[in-house]
Image 1 (tube, rainbow, N blue to C red):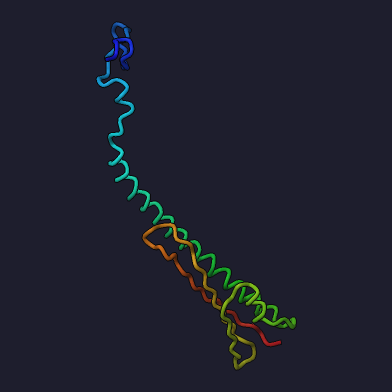
Image 2: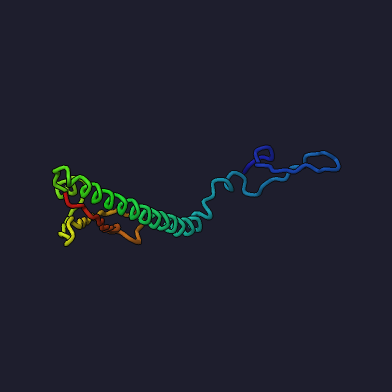
Length: 145
């Protein structure tokens, strides 16, 4: 059993008398070492963590889709611009990460270039364990030399 001096005390200051009044806490040190509420906090934290990770997954997917589409379009456009200088546009597209590329001769001269790039994003949430695959197309017209 604890002596009176060993009990944990809380207190408050009385505004009228400016005295500090002490009140003992029942249970003493065991109140601080108790693990009550750990199940409730886990039941709250797990869905909250899934929600946060899902929001991050969606935000990352939207941002990555825009970045990959911009990169694909840029790569196809660069490849078509350097065609008059004797460089092979299909080799340039392949070296910049374009997986599939095609060229279509136009009637008035020039070539229509199409390139496709696929990327797989990592998964952050258990709701989408396989991740997300993003496919983007880039189209450009190369002028006849």
